Image (tube, rainbow, N blue to C red; front, side):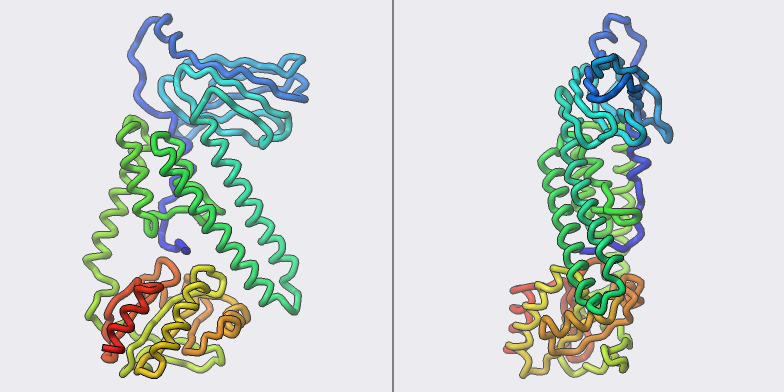
Length: 398
């Protein structure tokens, strides 16, 4: 699945806002002490290193405390948070670790100077959840970085089209796996604000794990879960507003009806692999399965097996398949056609998600199937696998 629509990027804003909330009413120092939070730490190879704890406040990091490790690498921080919030613990030349701390927690931290990945933390369930997610996210980003490195290394190779196809499939597999992992993480930890980080994580700049356009159900779930328990947090209100806006947009799209059953499918002209032009209307008089796909998408390559079965069953009827690729490399596109034995019509303008056809048909994910009748009218969309085959059997054999 690929997300390409306009996305409200709240990731950084979220982190910067999480510390904001209502101020506690004046109280006695004794009562406030009941909510003191302690961080007892041991930083190996620290050499008296400085430790800085900051709260993620409104658009700025708010200093909480600065301490130095003793000769054994130990340090101690005591502070009185007003409510649950996100923090960062800084040490070493650069970087930090993220914490999710509740008032009154007694936290034990062990780390190593200069290595932000080698640390253990106990006494703070929210911080432990963030550590688990961060570790998986880091592994994913490293795997994607290796694919990017290999792509640069082999770009001049004569076998580059085949290599790139394999790398693109790996990329799609890795991102899909982390998407599924993040979804499980959200559902298994629905009672913690840590799921906000999972919701807003990125594979890279402008490339979110979840988008309100294509993952609205996930956004709605997180919004419902956190409004029930953490509605006083400003970040939760930001999410709530975003979900409300996304829901209104969905309703507007539904009312506009980009693709409505019974209406004429938008016609278009695009290029075949040999460079000749083909129009959708060239196939009028047939039942047409119009499907958007890409060579690098594992889901699309699996759906190709379904399309092959459809052609085998219904190819002797007035049935045609037209595949529109959202690839940007002709060699990868044509290689996938040959490899998967896709013996039907193909077109692409090789503009990936910038293709006008993507906008015309409102394509937000691939594969995306549209079934069209002989007069050019849309019968149904979003049918895949056995559901698609059953619908075609109903149309062509009855």
